[in-house]
Amino acid sequence: HAEGGFYAGRCLFWGKGTELDAVRARQLFAQCFAVLLGEAEGGRSGAQVCVGLCYYWGWAVDGDLEVAAQWFARAATQGNADGQFELGLCYYNGLGVPQNRQLAAELWAKAAAQDHTDATWRLGLCYRDGNGVERDPQMAVTLLSRAHELGHEHALRALALLRARAPGLAVRYDIVGEGPWRARLEALVAQDKDVASYVTFVGNAPPRFFLTLDQQFYRTNLARGQTGLSVAFDLPTQT
Image (tube, rainbow, N blue to C red; front, side, top):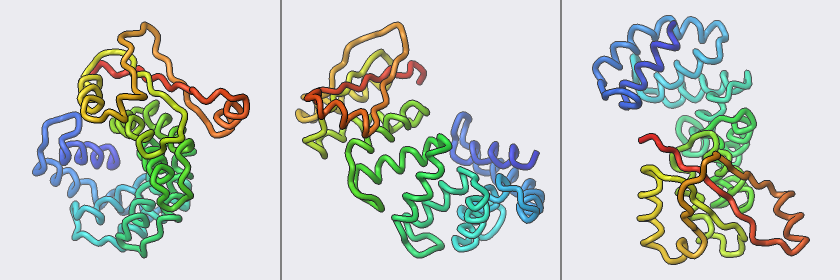
């Protein structure tokens, strides 16, 4: 399967889940590209994303950001979440298309609605920093929390730092469990007294649990005078 070969090559190229082997990765890209291009021209959205990535990174073809964006747009138009995410990156950074961060956020919102992990993460950062959307720390909490649920490796750190950027956000973070993330977060907290004031490490807890806050829930509790909301994270145990 051409798409399978492409994604195996991408894992080899970046060393994700396997040893880094750029030479073998490029061989796989070269073997898959002609088939992927045919499928992409035939309207297969997954293949369109793969072809776009080949043009974006210069895998099996000469790099061309404008052509890459065109392929991502074709996939995004079909509702492909990967295509929406990649096209959003192009618009956010002005790569192959004019920079338009509002459009980037709109594309990531569509992908996030399909539980696309990276799009959810990126959109959370947009709401945190006010890039392409009106700054909304609580929405940032909602999205970054969901990104954590979906397995994004940087979501916990972003949440731990969010309160420092939004002093009025009444959310505490209880870090539950053991594992490599705990050591990293403990080191982070030790370096920042502001972060330490609202992050608590509470040891192991048998059940996995996670509370995702949304704006309406937050505002309802705020109206009742209940501002001390808490978000609990169960740390992954794998390295």
